[in-house]
Amino acid sequence: MIAALEAIVRARWNDLAPEQALPERLHFLKTSVEDWPPPSAPMLLFAFADAAKAPVAAFKVARDAAGEAAVEAEARGLAACERLPEDLRRVVPRGLETGDVNGCRFVLMTVRHGVMELHHTWPAKRVLRCTATIGAALGWADRLAGAAPSAPVGLAEWLGLESQDAVLAALRERGWSAAETSAFAPRLDALWSAIWPAGLGHGDFWSANILYTGERVSGVLDWGMSSARVPIFVDALGYLAAFAVHDLYADRELDAARLAAIEAMAPFAALRARFAARGVDARRGEVAWQATLLASALGDRGPWAAREKVARAYARLLRAEVGASLQA
Image (cartoon, rainbow, N blue to C red; front, top):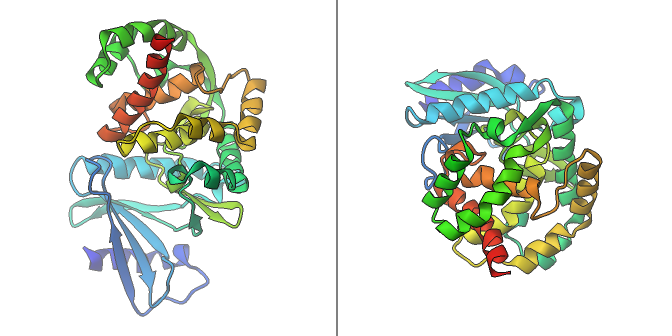
């Protein structure tokens, strides 16, 4: 397979590195997230030229039939970004080629460079010192949502849900009690009737998919969960939720004080004001927040498709809010 991938890189060299001479040697580094089941676990291979320390190309390669859907989704997401304004498009990898190698589906992408800041894993004091980079990420997501507006969308259409009863049944499968689903039912009525401004969404927007050069966003990666018609708040509120979901995913208790302190940061406050001007209440606990958590809690219907452990963490986060209301 590696020889075939090397031949593809060489054939597309002018698209990958037009200012560099064709290298004498290419080598590959493979990464893979083994604990996420298909279709979320294609191989990721980076191609390096000669002795360069930074990769010049990246491949996502399906490891089985189910993984082909993830590769095709990545290619579609990257293709949709080609229509974005330059200030948004330049930080997105370009999808150059999709095909089959040794019977495995692949997508070839350019590489964006920068530093990854794993804000979602950090203590609150450290996060609060990162106002500039977090503000840059949220600003980029907000511009993305407004760059390709579409008709307003509601929950049922957005997630392809059959009924409110189907939602409650799915939450019971996630471990919710009858009392909790009953307490959530009135909130679900509000979610079901809500209609939100919509646009292009990344769908997996959290700190591990964002690269920075200084205080500027220089790369936004992993477009396999993107959609051309999602509520405008999904990426921004998903970014906030990741701070809490990280604790739950690691089987720790939710640090509510940390989440509240992060939500109070200036970039999130500014974003809430911009959403409010468009008729969306993006405060934690309100309808947009609950819709964002619900989308991911439903697993195969939401942005975290097939990532069962992450979906359960989102369900726990939404459940914590319902539990608090029961205690009150």
